Image (cartoon, rainbow, N blue to C red; front, side):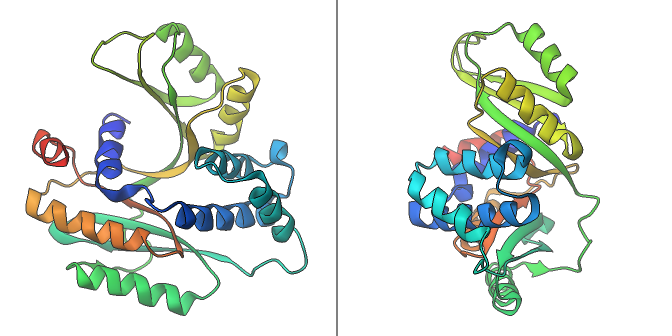
Length: 256
């Protein structure tokens, strides 16, 4: 998983996170609904619901909103939501994977195709990116005051595949920075429970699609790609967007 944090940093700096709180709430409510539908209302026994609730807290969603979302999702009047994915290519041949949750497939695919077309991309056939992205569990949390070696071993024993320390400029483990813990998809719940046992609440957790192959692009293509990704993420039906842009110092400087 080398380079994952750098890849994510580019994504974050150029519009990968929702800027509008209301839009973020809408996406999280959909995630809660799907999590309840597939795994029930008990967060202790439902790793996906635990992750959705963590996301809700990270954007300061009121508890009343969360409780209403869970109650509605478990009731007879629950929205009929479907999870669908779209795979395509943007400028420079960059792979783009779009995860959606929708109650209207026709509307969603129309909007997604329009976004790709506007910025010089195209939607491909289902499965065209199956060898480009691997689905992994990813947790991020502050480094804090820990022993790096001991902490890494405890995570590996719990089922983690990789532990990456992204330190601040001080270079000290006890200083600022972020830890990224990556797991196989099937071990996500096990590692999530380990954090709970340790009394640790990650800043972010969930299943992500991590690129196994990256693509170099110039700054002009990169700018267009970021506009495409931002436009996709503005759609309420789109939950997450992944890409395989290769990190470079040129792009890092461009993002500053």
